[in-house]
Amino acid sequence: MENECNHEHQAQKQRRGRGLSPAKTAETQTRIVKAAFQLFISGGFEGTRMIDVAQQAGLGKGTLYRYYPTKEALFEGVLVQALGSTVQTLQNPNLEPTGSIEEILRQAIRPFMADLQKSHKADLLRLIITEGPRFPSLVAVYQRVVLEPVLSAIQTLAKQAKARGEIKSEALIEYPMLMLSPGLLSIIWNGLFLDRQLQPEALFDAFIELIFVQS
Image (cartoon, rainbow, N blue to C red; front, side, top):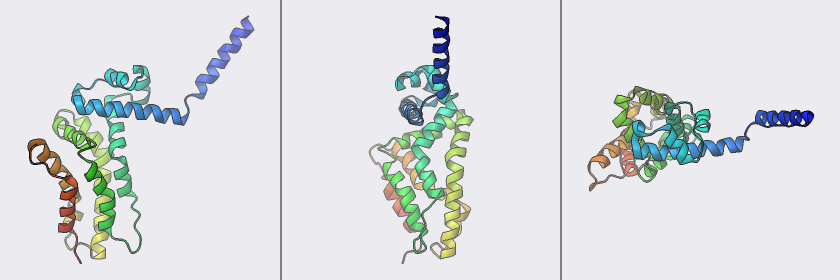
């Protein structure tokens, strides 16, 4: 009997040692991030509790903390899920020799703008604007994960556009955050004027036409 107990104990240790499969880990992270996104949007950063996220995701609180030890880390996971593909596209543009920087920016940013309202990503960014002053760590996460890499990528692309003659002014090189203005304007405007909604992608198209040299 003692040998059988020892054998079972060793088997349990081996199972724990193997851990979860990458697919299971990814599935659990997706459930957590999806639940957190919904709760952050509905309850804000301050009003969202980790226990609520765990319950929404159908997990134990301990499991949640193994993946995301703090609420800031969880918010970072939400940002990566919501905005990561746009950041990566800007950082690694597929620029053909005969292609244009204008087209790269359209391909990278316009789909995000078109999806901004219906995906509730606008609400996520609005959350940062409204709660950021009270939670500096929230702003720091957004700055590190999204803002800094995006501005660096836009500045690099703007320099290439200037060298190619696609833009005349160096304004976008000096102020790469201008490329984000259509999205920010639509977020603020649509939050204030519910009966006069702006389409972020239409604002983006208008901005691109103002910035780039038209043939």
